Image (cartoon, rainbow, N blue to C red; front, side, top):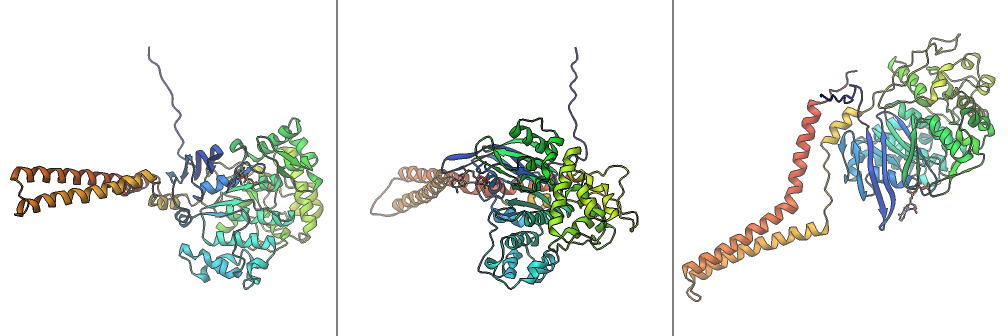
Length: 524
Ligand SMILES: Nc1ncnc2c1ncn2[C@@H]1O[C@H](COP(=O)(O)OP(=O)(O)OP(=O)(O)O)[C@@H](O)[C@H]1O
């Protein structure tokens, strides 16, 4: 009898995740806080990790960026295991993090803070040219001490510094911390724009609604583990049923999303509690200008040669709606931040109600121009984008207002920097973790080597001096003992010092060959 096994063959477009945590454990002072985190971030996607206080989100990001050593598991970047790599090396490759609490230097000016990004080889003027068009507010305040700026501006500065390094992967920790909901919304909009340029984003947030609005994928972390992964809709529905005991339907979740207050996950342990209004947390808040479809439209605009409007003026309601329409024009009635917030909430509510966050909610159509009220491209804010697969836009989607210029068809987002990163990461030197015992054995090897040489020399000298006559046989025996000790010492030294060096070069050679014979660079 012949048994035939059909093994699944990966499709040609199935790229490995750009960043992956496999069974990652981490501890502080022997107390384990991550108990085996598995998470894969596809190239070019935005993955939002939600979770209550103390779940381990920050620790997870610290481990991913090399700032905290894992006590188990591995970190993979662009197909290579980078566990143990120094944070500065990962940052040089393009894995940048915006830490909780912003991490700006309060006594330095805005410009001086930005110049810190020059470690990636860019000049000061290049950094400013790159950042100021995106953050005009920072340009206005470039000579101001960072510590005297508002919380939102400081967070902007932290983001600007990360963007200045031309990152491939951005890790963002609690963007919303201590900020007003409207500012949070504006910052998340910038995140969406950054993602639209092909940057892979892993963000952790407690403000579920806004984070889900920009995410392609979402995950929930509780008690040091990832407990759910899915589309933002699935996660929103799951949270809803978990905390309210309802059926988690989108309709139910949508019902109270117009309440307007920013929801927050709170608590510790395996179950979080939601701070009121509970329902508002369930419906992902569709940020105009964010989400895969909007990013695709923006990317298409850039490809078609139009100047992509990357200026995020505050307030930015007009820009947000123009992003949906694929053009660079400002909306006609989008300058009122309050109404913008209201529209966002209403859009999210309606979207969740239909299962895919249609942004053409009544709120929008009331406040916006005729054309925008028909802009069904906004419906895809909640679509899933996995493994670099371009987000799709529903068939028959009108991409522009009927009386306006035809907008370019939405296309795939900008190419993620996967290939460049894969090449760079192949050459990354990872210093293997050396234990105290390793070091001690290495030094023992050195001591034995010296002692062996000394013994051999001593035997030679004694055999040739008249004061202490040794027979030739004695001299040979002592000499052989010395040589044996030297060889043992040399072996120990090589084992515990040089072998790490050799292993690195062999691994690098193999990785380079794999890269050369594998995926070809994308042709644009
Ligand atoms: N430096 C530290 N020393 C000791 N314990 C720590 C340290 N940092 C964090 N912890 C503990 O690790 C656990 C996870 O903390 P972590 O900050 O990663 O959680 P979090 O999900 O990011 O929480 P939050 O949302 O409040 O920032 C908590 O119990 C915390 O007390």
